[in-house]
Length: 239
Image (cartoon, rainbow, N blue to C red; front, top):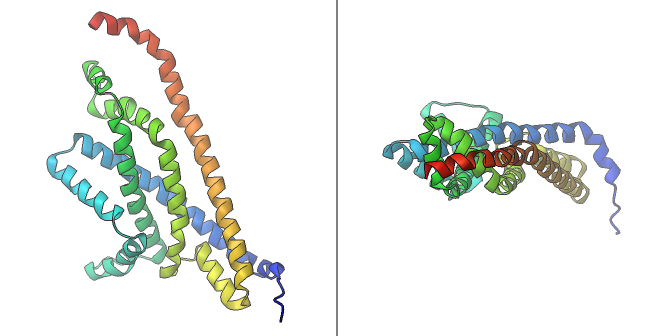
């Protein structure tokens, strides 16, 4: 018997697919912003924190970078209740996404910060800038410019990896695909459409991140570079 393809049958479940797409976008948006904020905080801690804080950050980063995301997700959802912490499946997925992304981006930012010349930090401190002002304006921005492509790629990887969140009944895109396939018994059509949707989401996310980088990361660097010649004579006098 020849198999008859019927992609139109997926349209009957358009609402479920739309809900799954919306939740996947929410996971990467909220988890991505929170994860980046956590990464910046950890980078600050490693640069200016006490030795104990640096050690704690190193343990966190190595733990989450060397264990599967699925296990991290299970620990947050099934393990935390053992300590009296009960959260919904959606909140568990967001927390696991934030912690996973934060660990990877902390290491990426560390590499970017290592590429910033120490002389810039010393010059900023000599101008009476605080440590936070120095980190924010002199260290973080140039570091982000250097590693923005790597951060963008990591965000896309995390978005695609969010498919495993269906294992704790988070109704994101892969959950919707499994739900539809279990009812229309058309696995090829269902997962083919889901694959195309994930591909479209990945392309769209890369485009958005590229625009953000060009407008808020690279553009700021260009403005700073334009002002650099004005500082050159002062630097010469200080020597």
